[in-house]
Length: 70
Image 1 (cartoon, rainbow, N blue to C red):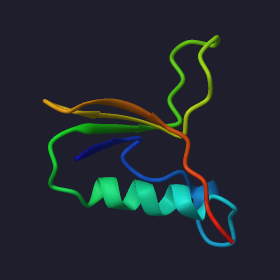
Image 2: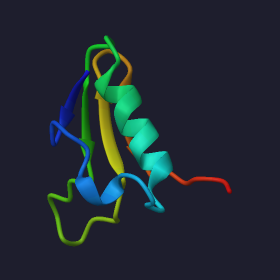
Image 3: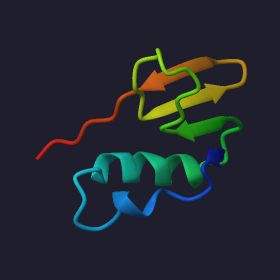
């Protein structure tokens, strides 16, 4: 799957509170599923914040807010 940006943002790595986002990003990046995953892209200032916008051809588009459990 194509991911944008192509690498997970560095602030989301070790010691971060964004570990679930990192795992989700890595899973998308390593997937052979056709599609696109955009991490924290906000094209409209009025739109709600989403961690990922994922588009899977023939399946649909998903706005995802990823949460971690401690």
